[in-house]
Amino acid sequence: MSRHRSPSIRPRYGRIVAVCSSSLITLTAVLGGTGVLPTGGQDAAAVSASMSVPSGAKGDAARDRVTGGGSAKDGAEPDEQGTTVAKQVADPTVIPVDPTEAPADSGEGRRVVFSQAAQRVWLIDEDDTVERTYLVSGSVYDNLDPGTFAVYSRSEKAWGIDDSGTMNWFVRFAHGPNAAIGFHDIPVDDGQRVQTADELGTPRSHGCIRQRPVDAKALWEFAPIGTTVVVI
Image (cartoon, rainbow, N blue to C red; front, side, top):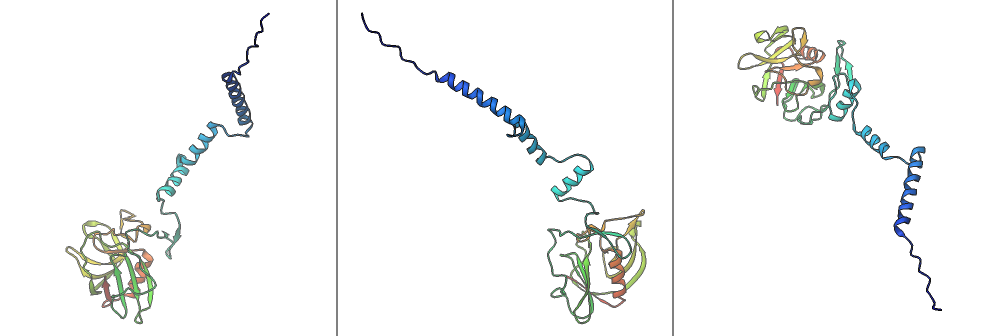
């Protein structure tokens, strides 16, 4: 009687892997359903929610925060005449200056200084103390050369050329190609101001220097005829 070897038992790895995989998938589904593990859909929704911007008014506000936009109401404060004036946000194109000090090379004595690069005005006393300083909007054209001038004319109310609006506290100190150049408040045309207060600090006019009404009145009171005006 011959001897027969018992056939060796070979483990079927394929079935083992399949069974383990199936068990793992089942366990993951159970845990995911109970909230122990996040599911793929939840992750995608969370990422989508963190990256998207809602629609409507709230969405617009969110977009403004992302893109650096925003309305004039952001950080707004009333001026002395009750007009809402937005706080200024630094413009990257404007040269930074120290507003508490009189600009270098701006002369001496009582004077008004206008910096075209910084779009800023200083009212400076005889002892070189800065009495007042604020942002303005000068000309978009190159029609005013640096130099020293003097106030030669003043009008509490004036009308722009070609019916371009009315303005108050007009203090003239230079002559442009077609009209006088001076300081005044932001003109009003058809009942609306031609620019907003939060746009001050950037060139916007066709020749003159625009100011908030409260600043225009302060310069009017500071600069009678003959006052030195220095443009830098």
